[in-house]
Length: 70
Image (cartoon, rainbow, N blue to C red; front, side, top):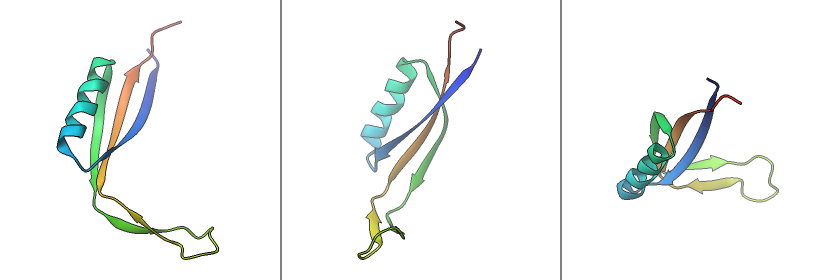
């Protein structure tokens, strides 16, 4: 059975995270990993202005789905 992977982001809110994980399970997804990242600054070198961008804290969810055989 072929696999399909998806990556979703979620704000730093455990209630929203819980809802997203339940939604993924209801759609046949399996959670591979959940990563929390703290608030930080990221640098975009492709801009002509101040390249610093604030990135809010939140979760990255990695999901795996089984694809039905054609």
